[in-house]
Amino acid sequence: MSPHIRPAQVADHAAITRIIVPTIRAGETYALDRDLSQAGALAYWTGPDRETFVAEDEGMVLGTYYLRANQAGGGAHVANCGFMTGEAALGRGVARAMCAHALDRARARGFAAMQFNFVVSTNVRAVRLWKSFGFDVVGRLPGAFRHPELGAVDALVMFRTL
Image (cartoon, rainbow, N blue to C red; front, side, top):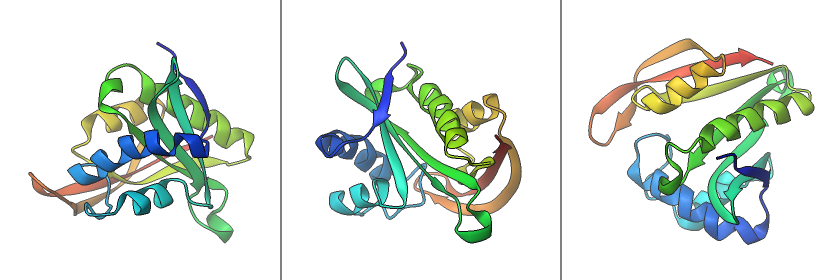
């Protein structure tokens, strides 16, 4: 399966919310307040400082990602992304397709590198995927994430040039 990836539209907001809110509520992969309101979650994901995309197949939104500058000023040449897929899309290559799209889009926007600031070490699927795209673990933050079931686990900083 190769999903179609396109810029998100206002009409996609309900579908995006159905993907991101359960992930945020689970509290296992993002350092966001688990009680963040649906409106707050959507505002975070589609904020004015980022481009938001959706991955769809046959009109169904299966995943979403955003692309933004990792930092302002002297760090604005490094991209940052966040990725989430719906439960029905797990294991179907949606995250892989979105990552490939994000790398291409970042290059097209003139970014020189991409950095993931806080990859929860127990998110094994994500770590494996990012490594398969050439990201290196350039930092480990011991016990920086409070996993709801596992307690304090490490967070990773992952980086690659474009």
